Length: 334
Ligand code: SF4
Ligand code: MG
Image (cartoon, rainbow, N blue to C red):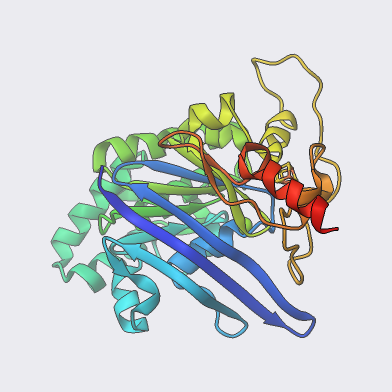
């Protein structure tokens, strides 16, 4: 399968008065054409920073991509000029955010906002732009599109506004859509409808989707593959099946045990403790202080990625054959 995006060893830092926050600390992942990859983790784990870095939307200062590559169809986006990047944003890669209201301009009609990107980037005539806008309104399921295009954002419900944001994001036919918590602001029924809409859109357009979320329910519904982030690192990746049924990282296991599931009757168990301070992240595994299975090696050396299948990899000493040897040398060196 063709890789549409490949992120290699990405590092992002923010310089503040209090010191430097190492928000993203060596992240690697890829996404194939037509696939949905979910990046999951608690707030502050670096998932939004990662997606903003892909789009080069990290404000510098205070933020900076200090290392790594973001290869979009083979071209490193971290090396492009801002002008070139502007021709990619919204055209080849689009992004949508949690709150549809902030993404829409309250003073312009929906129709105007829909055709804007198309006219700017694709240089099409007014009539072709209007035709395409109507098609998009239909695709995202807005009834009476012709009348609705003349209306303003406040005349739509939250769910309808998110549909419009999705239509705007897709009108230039991007190959990659990055959706950062796209359903978090919506109520549960509307959430389900928006997730179904993503599935339908992917079927029709073949767009690849990176879904950023803290919500495992959302992930269970539409992800093909999952990357679990913790303290600025991806600590486990796998297919949806591998992550939900054979999670290997104690943090992934903790996440799954802390949400209600239909297939388990056990009690919900929150993960005790808090993630480490990213002003001075630990050298070793960042989950050590919360991990019920932590060993001596864990807080000293970061575990390399161990490959468990073609699609499944985990950063945990429990899976690493070398852990025992390393432990032995540490004991003798004491
Ligand atoms: Fe727990 Fe150690 Fe694995 Fe980290 S490396 S998750 S502390 S067992
Ligand atoms: Mg976020």
